[in-house]
Length: 134
Picture (cartoon, one colour):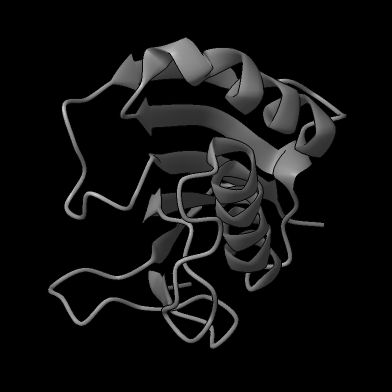
């Protein structure tokens, strides 16, 4: 099995030098390394301008879509890194996270950053997942 780059049409791909996710085989599993996801719909339009809750929901929807492209789910996520531009909104992010992650809980880091690449983006999340092969 080879490395797979994942750029499904259900997630907008920024015109850049990276792939949205990478799937790598290991014994009886595949590791998925998911690039930081933003609150962009499949056409690249911002979802939830100024609204941390709505942006977080879109980011988790994008994570779900990338995982699904490899037959994985949010239950397969082992590590999340969450970047927010306003740490005082941590509770809103946590509430969304709790709605989406109802199974096994991944390791988690949340970090406040001064800003993301666009001032309209309030949150970005990257992830690592392990999809066990049947």
